[in-house]
Image (cartoon, rainbow, N blue to C red; front, side, top):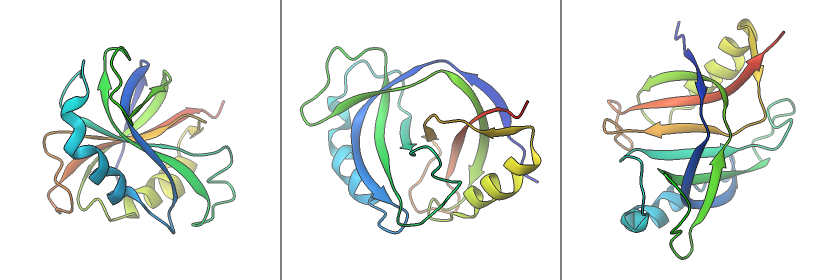
Length: 160
């Protein structure tokens, strides 16, 4: 089945916006509608990739509930936080190990995450780590398109 590459990520700095939401009350569209018209205001961008980042509270997936809230960010990687535009914030993705999955398909299809968390992870040599989860939306990402491509980064640490 779908196998990730395991990669050590150096710390990343993002500038963007965030919203509290749950899977039952998904506000992702609202978040991206707020930031996309303003993305050009973000200075010192490292590249053109967009980052969709989730910060889940500890134990979020252990006692999973679709109504449980988490923080979701829409942002761009930057070299520094010298110029944060008004009504935007900065956040750091800490360094650490990640399982990186290549995904092609609709961004509304949650089956990839079900596979990663319920099938791949329990059978792997890893457990979830308490760091941000994120997706890198590169040049081949197309919102709501079955040919869309992205990378899904899941924070992991060794079971041993």
